[in-house]
Length: 402
Image (cartoon, rainbow, N blue to C red):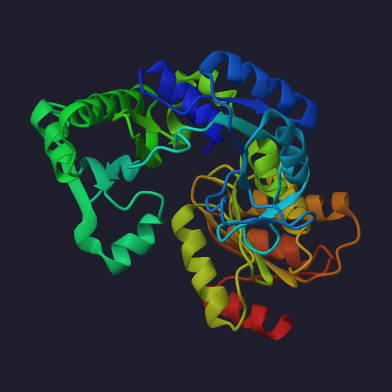
């Protein structure tokens, strides 16, 4: 589960990570009040207005309606409301959002930590994530902070520092010092970075996160180390242990169809193709998408109804798939192991009737327990539903119909 920058920073602060202080606002008036509060709290006289969306590249992104960037600097209290107005409720387009962009509902009013008139600030990259190949967490760091780490990895891979952490013993002092040394730090900045790394790792473990990414980590001109930005990915599977973190979910940032699917107990991911697919099992879903491509189509989604598909889940899957205007056909591919194929067939027929007018062809491939009975139910329904037993036949039918 992704969360916003301001939420990520609050988590980090709770674990002792030094952050760029800020206050979230959803109107220009609230932004002005936040700036005044921040001035009283930190003494800052310049303010960074940062769009809060689940995407990177905000500083280089552009708000369609006003032409403003997603991260701007206000050099006085009076400038803050206008800067916030240029961003709020606009559509911010970045390299990660795609051309459709994302609507900005909130901005973070943050203190300026680059100290006008002073020199020698330095930006670093720092992240913690799971290295699945090695079966342990890894700290990744780089002197090239503020840049996309993918670009650094491609162009200058030697500038990426990696330190793997043995899960049996945890992060050791020499490892944090090794990273700080590799970043070229010394004195107070070195000590601050070691403390920062330990606090960050404690937060990563304590929240059961999949990734913590701080880009940039700033060394100020007076050698303080703090998080200027923060991206946190929380592990969905561990949220039952963190009810407070589960409440941070912002549904407005997620695809409405994926939200609806989750509420119906379905695993759904929207894709860009023209053939909707509904299956039971992730492995079968991958094979089904391969078959769709081999038939000349493109999968429009990944939709796994699970091992206990019934009329309700099938109907919910239909409704979600049909909200995609690009879908020209639907392929239902069910293996009857736990679930009986005749029950799925009855579910398809019932769902078809409940939804009403369906103007696209539906191919149903049933295999396993009671597959023949299921095929008979489909064929005798009188509906615009085509039955297949062999996967090759299903693919041929998809090709014919699209």
